[in-house]
Length: 157
Image (cartoon, rainbow, N blue to C red; front, side):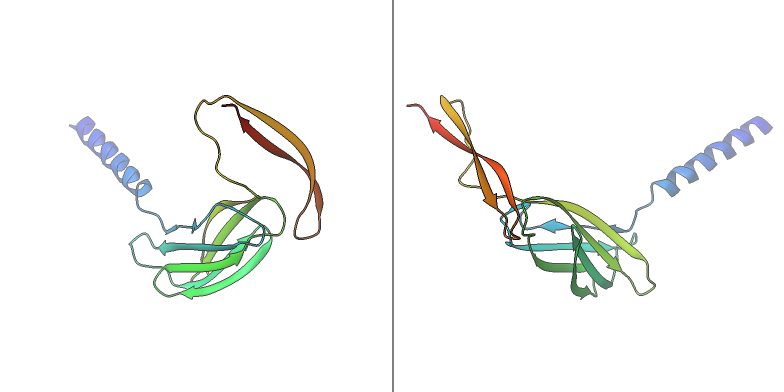
């Protein structure tokens, strides 16, 4: 009888532990209207911040792109949005949103943004083509000069 009781208690404790780890978490989402942009393009970031019980988190919204901070409009219902200009240098950047509620607790999430010039669509299919790579110098809007490879694709007809 004691063995059955101990087995039942052990299984009950395991079930409680599983439920406590499976409980919903506070969440903050972040979405960008584009993940690949040109220098200084306007980028729209938005998302939803919710407590585990489903109610919206209200508080101050701070957006960081690489090391530049943007103070966005506060959220009162968990929905937030912010507009910022893309960095002036080609590269990949981490975009992080931080929402600080009235008690000082910080909720955050991140995504990536790529600043890159692009021309036309990427070719698809299996046509016969030749790709020429031409080294060029390009100047970022911040004044930095760097070497890049310009690819020219020629389709044979």
